Image (cartoon, rainbow, N blue to C red; front, side, top):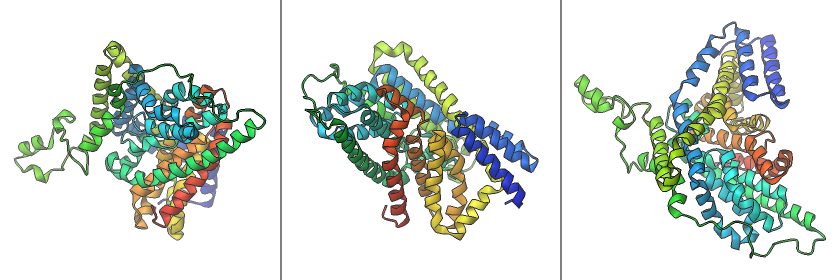
Length: 468
């Protein structure tokens, strides 16, 4: 680690504070992070590492392929209306269980966000169905919007190997993102349950106050539902989960499906072994890009299935796919690139090493810092991806030195960053949820803030005492 003088440390701290303030004032997070990265690197007199990081991440297929194909798939689902069939299938029980509308919508949003990794797209899918349904139950627009926001953004995408946060963690650890999901599962479900329970209580209390003095404060009649007639096609409803099923069946520990390497890489291990005249066993089991491209292949399989499920929409499928891929590059990959540059600058200036030393001195700080620092950064920037990509690498070495599992630390960082994004009034999903319900994103952020903070704190505590 470079030796950091006091003056250099103060200047670096001022640059970082300036970037934080710029984001707070509404400056594009990419501009703020990239400017700060070059300024920090300039303190060392060498900005070449930042340029290399920019170019390397910009062209890194371990990010580009899974994220762009997953977002392309999400756009195809919207084009073929498969996402609507899934949402309406999941929300059908809620029409006869109005008391559970609020937690039900959160849960449906969480489930839909697993295959549809875009939080904004998930919110749009939900809005078309649940807004009229919840308004029929005389729930306030703030409650409706906050329910959509919490469900669409709390972290369902972290159960999808194509999620950008998981790809960031896997990239840093040199493992496929499918191996990160098992570390997420025992944390995200208690987090979901507790946050939803607190949120439900707060919403019911707010609704009681709002409806005081009204003759019928609670539920409208179940008859005459404003949701238009829509016949759910089970085949189309199942299309969104096909890539997930394929990935889990093709990966460890199941390994039920064997996808030949020649489908995704130019030179399979067997071919290399034959050229070298040696047993295939002496080579790596799979090409390093195999797992990355397998995610892309699974998403393409889903695209084909979606097209076949709605033949009348086939002509528009390619356009929808590439529009989604382009959106992913512009809105997600760009954040990964700039956040990587910022993280690299923090590393070369030596601040990452200082964080590691502080955690080694007080090991109990590892998980709280890994949780609440990304949460705060995501709440400020509106991006869970930028928070994960920028900050996770700071905790890898301290975790390994303390004997902690870096995958579990990565799960804490990713879930906390998702929570920070959810409570951010500048996050795209918050703005969309507010637009769908005619509310303010600040109103929605205030409603979900306390449940998320409490559930993240409890999740970290339970992880520290090894309960989960």
